[in-house]
Image (cartoon, rainbow, N blue to C red; front, side, top):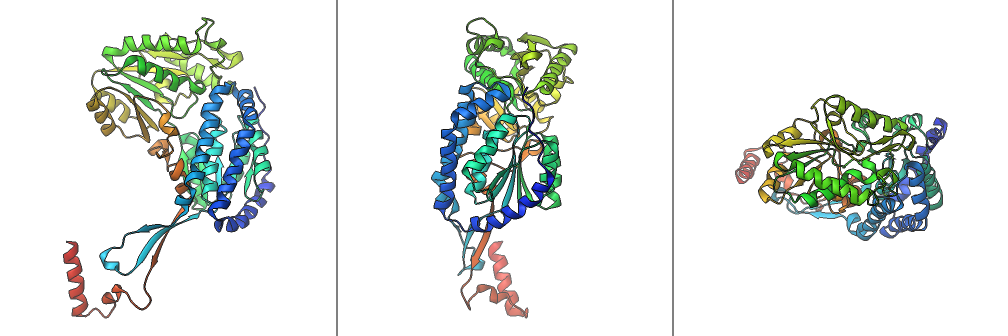
Amino acid sequence: MPTPAPAAEAPDLAALLPRLRARSEALRRESVAERAGRLQRLHQWIGQNRAAVQQALHQDFGKPATETDVTELYATQAEIRHAIRHLKRWMAPKRVSTPLALLGTTSWVQYEPKGVALIMAPWNYPFYLAVGPLASALAAGNCCVLKPSELTPAVSALLARMAREVFDPAEVVVVEGGKDAATALLAQPFDHIFFTGSPQVGKVVMRAAAEHLASVTLELGGKSPAIVDASADLRDAAEKLVWGKCVNAGQTCVAPDYLLVHESVQAPLIEEIRGVLRRFYDAEGAGVAASASFARIVNGQHFQRLAGLLEDAQRRGATVALGGGVDQSQCFIEPTVLTDVAPDSGVLQEEIFGPLLPVVPFRTLMEAADFVNARPRPLALYVFARSPEAQRYVLGRVPAGGACLNDTIIHLGHLELPFGGAGNSGIGRAHGHYGFLAFSNEKAVLRQRVGQTGIKLFYPPYTPKVQRVVDLLLKYLG
């Protein structure tokens, strides 16, 4: 496996923030054209280095080039293009209406950058989940420190080269390294921290941010359920579930983590999944391990964790309905469907982050909703049903960061939708305008006429006349 990136030296970090903060004052006054130009240079660099991104992802965990194109390059470029296209409107002050008590005033919301942002990216989509938030931060006018994951050293090195070739070093800096580098960065007084990762590390980030009263966006994980109603189109559901579960070998924060299926359609759905897996990854009959379309687990540690979850589930009585193969030498876990899963099994207690899919049958949608709601709120919710009543029922009963009806994952790519979690699965929203707002201070501005204000009616002394005016106002509000 690739060697992790070396740790950054703390003394370098101590001098980093003052340099970026000084530059951030100039960025605060930049025009739309200047910000858009910076984003355009980033967009061009990515287009020119497509092969290098593909190679880095394949080197780090065997990601197929086509999958990199769709989930890393397209997603990133779409985010950047969307920001460039809408930046003028996003940056413009937003007029707001005037209440009766403040007649004569004019008010608006003015957007200003927060200052210097820290973006801590994960290893599972190491390019997209680094550069996507970076684009939002730059659109909002911030200087940035980008901390890639040390578990994907080839992508980390590529991001460092990108920063050197595209940006002024006083505007964007990539800091490579492991836990020591991350800890040193979190000790610095950033204005905003954007973290993508596990809930456990998210708590560490939030505690560190509290020391400097920095705002945070936490894109965390959790167990995202997929509910298959009796009214679902099973073949369609099977295709979308297999794609959502197996893209990136299941190492996706919004992958369907477990499957709740109406007991009347469990057996036929599993057969449909069997056929889809064969078509997607084993059309020649050589096994999924021979497929050039299936990625690998990022490293030996995560492989061992997943193999342990599979072994634990079987030890507690689970049946391997499909798959079950593992190969430690390749960090390969075969797409696996588990039935008869004990409720206390690890695959139903912790986020899987791999191609294991436990199946739990239900009799009523109330039972399915109660099962989900007994656990921390998920990052994503997937509902497969042709029945509008079933769709409305689940959406109304199950809180989640986001949801898809009759599909998986793709809501993440809709740039007019906010993306984020609920409770344990995250804080804040990202993508498109929501990403711009995450890195912006929404300054409230009110302009009063000189020498005139209705508020003078309420100035002391509080005479009976003033009281009558107040009484009239309260009567109006009542």
